[in-house]
Length: 276
Image 1 (cartoon, rainbow, N blue to C red):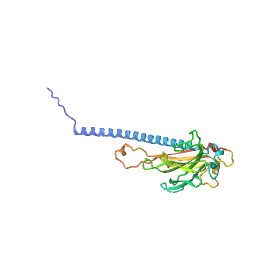
Image 2: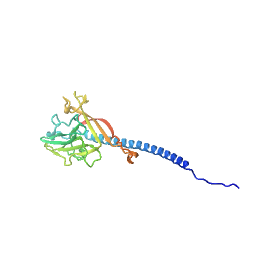
Image 3: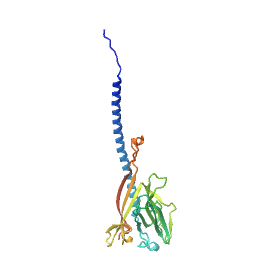
Image 4: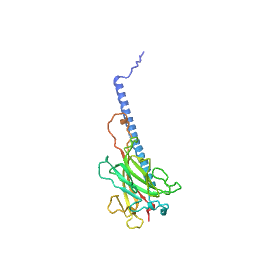
């Protein structure tokens, strides 16, 4: 008679099995982590694209109203000329990224609008246009502009409010000027239009020979620039966003800080109401 004996796994075999299982697990985790990192980048890029499109569309909509006239013969105090241009702006200064400055916008007569804490190395932009009594003309904050009023919208980059997730935002401050030339600031103050906005640069397209085509695009402080001859704007914006954390970061296994995602876009907008 033969006796069959049944033996278990030896310690060496158990250790080899654990080693192989660990190597397999590490490989799976690496593949999963890499896939998630790629997905995070795609999500971040999609957010930047969405924010960029929103910021560009919001600005373009308002800027296309620049210089709109309704019944100019009834509004003599609101003629758009070199002293009261339909479009104006200021050029940023070459300073540190985190510094700010105050910008004063002339609204009407002695009434000025101070834009506080404007990001110092970015530009500002101010546009003027008249309204319509049918409610089809709205300012940058969504308020209706009546036919006897002129809206003055100012756009600028400033530090975001404490309740905002992003560091900087694109803001708009608006005011009204009535038929007597009296200006009134909007009670809502400066309101963010687009978060994650880090930079705004504006070039003014000047029609120097009156043929309806911009002959040059220059900054607001360029010598000889005639704002009353500006018929187009070239906007360059930088939108940024924090990249989502990876699996390793969420697990606390690394102290590496991933850089913000950034996207720069440029758009040229024709000021159709100023074309001659």
